[in-house]
Image 1: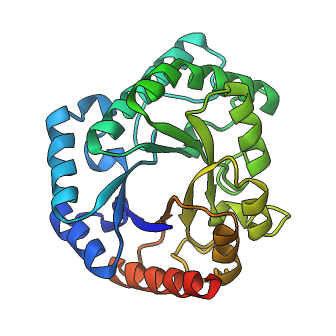
Image 2: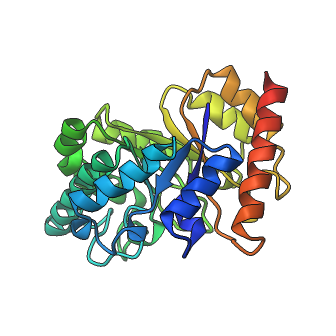
Length: 273
């Protein structure tokens, strides 16, 4: 397992300062929100990607990939019944795959609840079909760039589409691509009926990526979630991917969040071993 940070938590920190701090705390990967580079992926130039990739590598780190794929954008929607919108959004994911590869990453985490919630008159089953059609449009680019979209189920407090890991796996099946897999997030899994470790074990074969956080919107160890059984489950299923810290409440300060999250994850991983 490798530990990474999602970069938007650094807010207005210059990349060099933020990534250097992450390295000093012990993280080895950076997961990038595209809106920290430009408001729209079409505005993220190859030169900007190369500059960011070089900075990350010069600091001895790796680029995990990108997340918050549709955040802060306009005019894209995952579950629209409109073929034109499906085409536009699918092509945007294709552009993001190019950006992801240019940054040196290979994972795209698809959450973005505000651009996937059920539209009026659309059932969940219909939305699943529309989402699959949209993702299929991006599939050739995903394969060409060697990038995987990791579908992120989110709890009902964040939206009404794809609320469970089981639904994520179902959507995977509808797309039927080796480059579309499952993402698991502790905050989201905590809303399901089954314990988080059981969800991890059940979906080990389809899981491509993992976010560590707490339902209180802070990092690992900063809330009530016990991470020992979570890391025990990840170890049991031989998960070798990234565990990225993604938080939404920055009030304790980014330094505190980074340090306490790392301390918790290291301790839980050691206990699992």
